[in-house]
Amino acid sequence: MVCKSWRAKLDTYLDGELPEEEMRSFDAHVRGCPACSADALARVQMKRAIQVAGKRFTPSAEFRRKMERTISSKPRRKLGLGWILATAALVILGVGALTSIYVRNRTGSDRAFSEIADLHVQMLASASPVDVVSSDRHTVKPWFQGRIPFAFDLPELQNSEFSLVGGRMTYLDQTPGAHLIYDVRKHHISVFIFQQQALQARLGDISLSSKKLPFNTETWSQGGLRYFVVGDASPADIDRLAKLFKAGAS
Image (tube, rainbow, N blue to C red; front, side, top):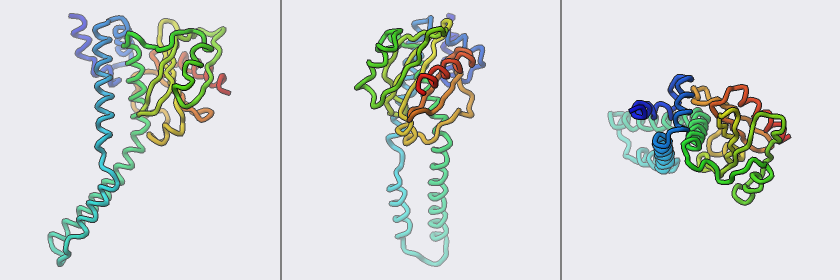
């Protein structure tokens, strides 16, 4: 009966629309409840499958040009209703194209953070959150060689509160990358690393999203790579882990 009340808010949780304290309670429940973890994982996977499927049928620029040629090839008569409608159609197509470009550029960052949050939730809900299990960075880093098209450095964690759990391969908008998991005081933190150029080609410029995020997040670009640190740990912990990565990559 308790899980029934949790599941009623599961979609709101996955969209990051719950109050901050309720988000933290939900995070803890998802990690400890196998049934809700499985449900959350299934919904995240379905959400990502819908996102991928939706991109397959985006009208191309060639389709727009074809429609413009079709309209412009119609016999021109006096400035009557038909010509007015054709002109209006061209204006609408032009405005639609500009709007599409604007929306893509404006929402690229939001889409990136939405998918990053989904990947973090997927890790929390998974029974096997990592593919390489080790607290030794010299074991985790070599595991990625040949699996992703770039190399990266992992920070030294001595004299810090963080511990490395392991890592796995991941994809952000079909761009391959590394997903590393760290623990701090029973909180899981995800660190995602992607090639900046490949990610920018697909999503445009990425900065901290203006939308309310379901987790504390930090992102930056360094050495041709784009880093995301995300989790329900405190903003100070997220910032400290980010600083360790920045220092290790220098």
